[in-house]
Length: 100
Image (cartoon, rainbow, N blue to C red; front, top):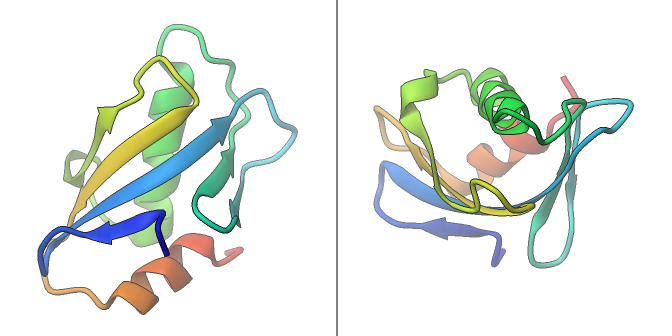
C-alpha cells in the first residue's frame, strides 16, 4: 500500500487524490493512492475542510489529529494522521474505506 506510510505506531502518512464537485462523498482505493470524492468546490478552502471532516468522521478522531502536509492547493495531497493510541494498519484502512 504505497498510499499509506506508517511513520510510527501512532502516526500515518496518507497519500490521496481529491476530486471535487462530485455528487457524493466517496473514498476509492486505487493501486498506489486513494481517490477521495468531495461535494465541495475547491474555493475558499472548502474542499480541504470537507476532506478533514470526512476523514475525522470515518476514523472517529478529532480534526486536530489530521494535518494536510502538502497539497493545500492541488488535488494530490499528503495527510498526516496522528492517533492517540496504537493502531493496526489494516484496521486503519478498513475504517477509512468502509462505506458507513
